[in-house]
Image 1 (tube, rainbow, N blue to C red):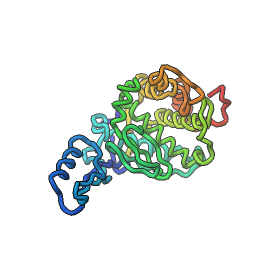
Image 2 (cartoon, rainbow, N blue to C red):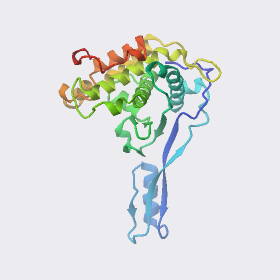
Image 3 (cartoon, helix red, strand yellow):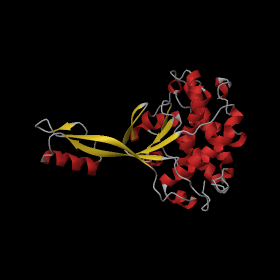
Length: 296
């Protein structure tokens, strides 16, 4: 989707988390300076390194800062990925603030953290390799935007703006499920094409589609719409992302084989179909739990 360039971003929905290095112990020797410079210029985590005298140590610490002040308008969101994340978050928050009542839930805004390299969460340590995820204990979404390069280069998505925002909308859908009690009520330990874990993921895809279907009507604080009307090619962009992260597509690329009994997120066809269902029919059509497995 293309942001309305005149829309205003209020800020505050997205936080950025970087890594800072702190040197402790009884003084800083040459070796400590060397490993510090390596950490800064290569990104290699050298926390825990101790000098030969046992006194010099470098520790990596999370530092949370607010998004860049440049993220103020829809024009900024069209140009910069971190501003796009802020704009998507503000639109999603506006949509679910209105829509949650139709699902019978009381809505609260999730946290949304962009991190670089790695970060600690209530669900454990996360890295770029973890991919985007929702952490229920933190009620927050965590995302390293480097994943978007992988989405295109490794997973074969078109990688356009709506493909990127689909990822955020899917994780936001998991927050809605947390509020619904879906995580608590669903056995997600099993695998297979009709397992509880697959049903949870397909519902989140459907919720993402529901937001896309209404995104052009979401408004900023001044009543200006965030987005221009969505186009067919932009919907295809989101569908390419849904297809790229289907279990069968990932397995085929990795091993050349597909094993439906090990599915945890759903096939490419399933993920696209439930996204379209939400896009066309809205969030109330996203009950994946009452559908027979053969119809998923």
